[in-house]
Amino acid sequence: MKSNPADIDGLDKSALPSHIAVIMDGNGRWAQKKLLNRVKGHEKGADTVRMVVRSCREIGISFLTLYAFSTENWQRPKVEVSALMVLLKKFLVSERQEMVINNIRFNVIGEKERLPANVQVEIQRTRDATKDNDGMYLNLALSYGARSEIVKAAREIARQVQSGRLSVDAITQKTISSHLYTADIPDPELLIRTGGEMRISNFLLWQIAYAEIAVTDTLWPDFTRNELIQILKEYQGRDRRFGRV
Ligand code: IPE
Ligand code: IPE
Ligand code: MG
Image 1 (cartoon, helix red, strand yellow):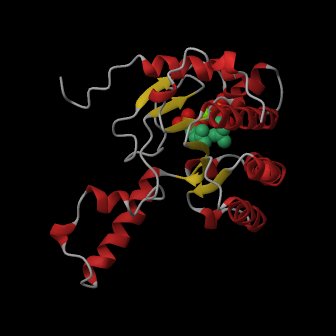
Image 2: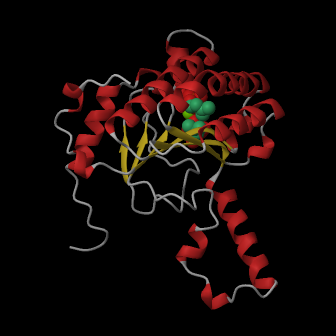
């Protein structure tokens, strides 16, 4: 993979977040501004996904979690949901080889069973093709909602208690974390949201307890590698106190 070292200048390689989570918002508004169909915005947004994945890999980020479709997004018009599913399938097929070559391990977090069968098949193929990679771990949040993730964890833990395999007093923060989709990866240190909204929209509620938040007005299709680097620089200048002085 080609990288331009000049672009990464000014970033302290030893103080990068290990896990970046991104709420990729603003595709619809990008299209509307150009008097295009919202779906055109999602198409352009897919190019930004490729660029961000590539950039994070080059910069040396270990874990990247991208919010692509929420449990609430199922309530959008049928045509938009279908178009998103078609795009998603295309993305999985067209990027598989690139992920293999670039040593990226692919995973999906969310209610996979609600996705169309053909998308589930492509997800499985991409997971299988990349399962031994250790360059960067890419999580796509699909049909993802943090509250249902926590409900799922609560049910699993309750079942263990009910069956006598776990005592109530043995339940710790670790127990909860280990029943989330993100059980095997660290919490994100940095959460980026494009599109300017100052909200979390049901994303990784437990995991972002101490994440630094960066919101940019830039709409997702317009987001650039340069802006990503700017946000990382700003992150490196922050004082993360974790409640201490
Ligand atoms: C984010 O862009 C992509 C998805 C939620 C699937 P939006 O489609 O939410 O774009 P806006 O917020 O309407 O501009
Ligand atoms: C959040 O964006 C979900 C994704 C980016 C996938 P939304 O556009 O769905 O969020 P709201 O509606 O602005 O809260
Ligand atoms: Mg939106």
